[in-house]
Length: 313
Image (spheres, rainbow, N blue to C red):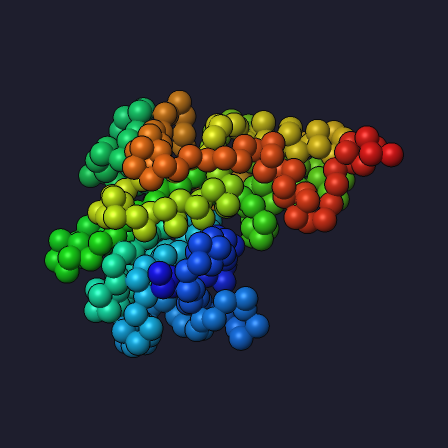
């Protein structure tokens, strides 16, 4: 299978490209940060460059497109919604148009659990409709629009798309703004770990290896036209995560502060998000829990937490 990964030089895109390669697929990367020393062949291209995308897609003829390019930092989206909408919405429309023109068999689209903010019920499955009152954040709106575009291209052009709505991701190569990365970096420097607000926000952190596996499984025939919720194996609060990281480093201090740029972000409350559909149809379930994931992250960084060092002496 020929797999083209948009945003393939980024954190998650790189993991997806490696997963495809490990399955024996031929991989090409499309990313505005791509350079010739990238591990994968590719092209440096803006995701909104419609004509260039059509030319590339029709010449290389991918079987599957893994679409991850866009602005993933919600705070950056809040600060500059026009640029973000151009990348997330116009860019997605351009990728879907190029895929339809090239006869791509499947487009797997990076969605987000943030769309749950636009849903009413406390038990969420893939059939839960979006509220017409809106999403409450520019990032959420862009993610909903990506899903609607996928439906439109399927209906109007017969393009087979699959949307993966996933919870916050962490793992090797993650960018510094992600909370797991920020906590580990701060702990390695002796602290403190900064928790915004009271730290009661609940998250089901999903390891990048598990997500990459889901992307590849989503190319299966059964996934055509489907949406899948993907969650990590456990839900913890931000404060609980901070305490886990603090304990790994011998009890570094934790501080709290308010951050106005985080208004309107994802709220889990007491919601239950079902991943049963992904398990049933794709045979997918998350394998890496947060404790194992933190240990893997330390190992990937070539570090050992102080308490582990002491135990090995």
